[in-house]
Image (cartoon, rainbow, N blue to C red; front, side, top):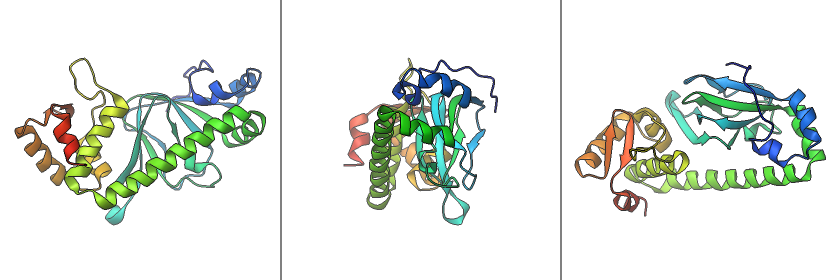
Length: 225
């Protein structure tokens, strides 16, 4: 972690929703942090020290599941808020790890509480974030309960495509390991490897190393309908 990064006090949701005069105090209170690929931003069970606003990069939010396995709750990129469930709790119930070099703005807990009392627009925006987070969580629970493993794997690929977009060659911009896809889909590496082999042979997806390109999106979506 490197705390020497700079922040323009305009790039994240927090500063965008605050009144202009409040930004001067925020500049004194906030921390702008840089994380390397694979570096943990916070861990499950850590004491809550603030809320984290992603400025750039990619993050996986995850927690320990059965038999010491990891379940990825969601992926986040620039503009997303992570650690939001920590507000009001004393410890984090999930972990967050950078998947590529990532810049984070950390708003300390005490300044966040004062900011919500002073900035009605910020309170409203964070309420929207909480509502969207609840909807995502409910959809994830439904997917894990009702979709078969191919449906969950297809949903994982489509979610990555939507969240991170595609590069100039049409591959999903973020390179994600098969293990991380398995952890998001609630299955094991070997199952994802087998499904990928089947879908590559059927010209549904194409891969080069960890890079994934969707070839037949309609067919991929058919697994979750």
